[in-house]
Image (tube, rainbow over the protein chains, first blue to last red):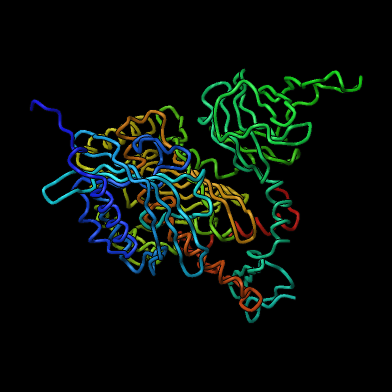
Length: 168
Length: 434
């Protein structure tokens, strides 16, 4: 190939925003099987530890570090009424802003966004999860797919957020 | 006068009632809700026991430090410039501000931002700005950071004690030492390390509920059925053993002095050293090699003890070392009667290869931690229990009678090992030494 690939040049920020907003709607409405369809077959999902937000999950203990196998298992769990931390499912509302295409990573498009997720459950205080997303998106014939998503929390510790039992 | 725990039991105002006639063991739920009892616990238990501070591996180099809360006190756990491990109250001698605000780091001094008093890493006084204003008798050199009254370690696990007269750590740990050994023996050199990345979170429940939960195998089948499903899908046989609730027949053990453990034949994957399919085919030979090293170093019997059992160890009052799908070091501190703060790390042999370390961390997250497949449901269960205790006056007694009167060894699904904790708790709340 003579010319280096520039996948980021093939999409607009509006297309990326459409994907992220669609994803947010699927997650907030707990349409988790539909959400899985947004992912590539080798997708991964990370929540780094609060004290090492930029670390590598192979050397550092994360809060969540799912490969696609475990991610599918996580969805099985989240749909199970015996997933006590999330049954009935939490009411979540995620506000996604500051969406930017920040470059290429090989054949993937690197995307940044900010999030504020509000979680409400009976018997529990309202909880807020605030931070930034880092996505790696893959252009395919079927449109953009999520190859990697990383939810990096701003808080110094999970603290009053408690468990991360739903998908950030 | 409190209600009676059972028809024939007599509580006489006691909070823990062990009825050896009717074979019941009852805990009054006031112990989970009362601010006065928490205050008593802080004085009678946390100020008297050896409480976990940190691990030597967190202080690799001279000048390394981490800041910790020990029995509610701010403490700097550090290795001074000469290499000695220390635990110093993180409190300026002048007006009391914290002299170290960072979570961790490496430093030549601890420095108070208020008036600039500075301390060496061994705690000794380094400098006081404008010290010519102090009167002639002012002994500047005596104004170093105050060390915790007692600091000692067992195989790199450091504990502090606020009571200068406490028994030595080795005596205190009693039978728990043998179970720490089973963890440490996983390293060819006997050196384990805390892996970077800490999990810190709150549970809106009384701290003692996490002691119970950490070693209670009775709840596993109901609370963690989604985890068991995941294990089954990962190549683990989760069929209960004949006559038992879990795949293997495990035990709950009294280790003396309030310490307790489960001790279960392994049925799941273990980084040291039991392969399951979720690790991937490429890991099989590696796990075999780990096993062979273990056998060569320790012999067949000891290797099997280390590699083929899972143990959830509770060191009184608030340290838990789980050796199962991975190894966790977890301690928890009461903030209020209905709120605890949990801090958890992963622990692994220093010799691990990158692939082995990655496998250990992957395995950790299958079960443990706030994003794991099991811990969030434990949190849910504990918080529901705490909610229920709002009716502690009307529904006052918690029942911990499973296995009482049995002539057999207590099972991990019994509550004999939970009763070990509560007897020690009760004794110390009534003035017994640690």
